[in-house]
Length: 343
Image 1 (cartoon, helix red, strand yellow):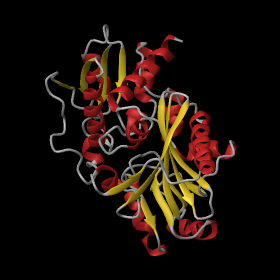
Image 2: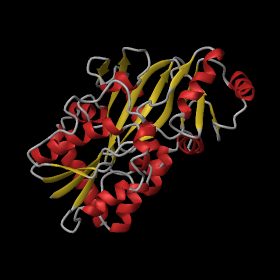
Image 3: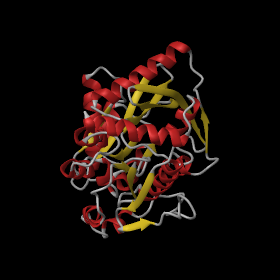
């Protein structure tokens, strides 16, 4: 197939998106496809003889989201329009966060009648909105950490927030933007005095801030490919929390795949991951993140509809553990998308 890979964008996950895109481009080419690689925020086409937008890889911190936003939100539309889509058979989305993952680009492609990988408009929007996801999880009987949402970070009364945290679940508490990924803007607050600083950090990336109970225990994730869950992965980060640096710096986290769980517990978390995937209406592939609490219960954190596809990413690791190498993985994702659009 002739496939256009969209990557980059203007979200805080821009660098990760470029790294994912580079890997996807190479994998698709190895699988025999003709690939056109586009950085949506720059309008830049990667020449066919090149494989990398990021010669030095992903940095240890996300880029300045405010600087990225000055490049203009309409750039993605202009970029896509500037390249002929007439002979493109599929758009492979390697965008993370922002308009690339929240249903905006998906809606544009729907209107253009172009097949694309991953979930549709509604599922993408629901998964990106953590509060909406958690409401659906609760409705479907999928356990998720206790939480509340600050609708407007600018008009929030700090004393009221402190009171709510104390009365709801206490400390440690997790403070994070309501619509970001890659743990961008996330802080684990262990003492009340640090809550305001954590809120200020989250406010850089989103208007709405989610505050939830911290679940002590293990970090687990379940990838879903098509209609089947992949092997479970346990993440053991160097920092104790699976933050941006630990996610995208080699050697900063240990990955155990398949995770050391009983057969019963493995089946339980895989079923929960698939249920969360279906509850939001996801399609194609995704990754569902969990905490395995010291109370022996699984707590669903979120569903990532366009999970990372870098050298350290989890879905490729899980796929490899089930006998699917990277070129086969991206080829399968592409074929699932084509089958979906052909009905």
